[in-house]
Image 1 (cartoon, one colour):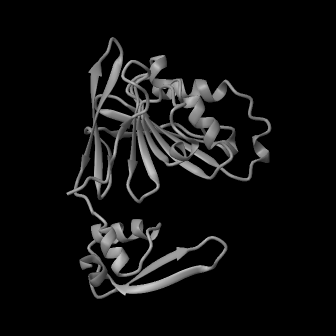
Image 2 (cartoon, rainbow, N blue to C red):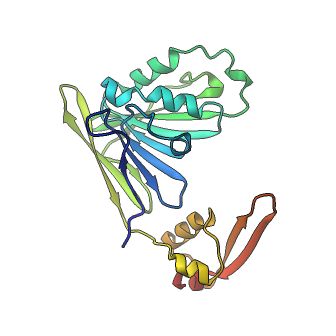
Length: 236
């Protein structure tokens, strides 16, 4: 069974560490460590929804500014995880800039920072429309080793010693839903965003007799819709 994840090193083994992990058909990705990001395209970086910073040595964290600059002015929400004192480090980066013109932006960038300790985790939200100022105290919650848990995958962490607290990470794919391209051709269906909804319907074990909406849009044309019984589409 093919994996939905296709990780690749951002840089060569002797340069800044970093792992870029795109999720097939979902137009999203996660990143392990924020070193030099210049080898990633803007298209790649705009897919990022979750970032995991193992520790804040420069070669693991200097790429934060690159990511921030690219996402600024867009309606985006990202989650960034790091070890002890991570929230303070992110706030220092955000407060280093002058945000008096950001009120001219119609879009809002939300950055959710999660600081991981051995038994607790603290979450704070920073929004561009508020000049990235924290509006409340961080939310505290128990930490049992799990950082992200979704239907298709989970990401867990342990704290390690690197002369500072350092996060060790594992990504586990629960099971993979593979799309058979030949089957799509037989049904005369295009690849597109509807496949993400189709996968979510499979994970949710939707009624096989329920009509499933398939939609796509050709450049310069209106959206095309088609309905196929979910069980038939899943089998085909």
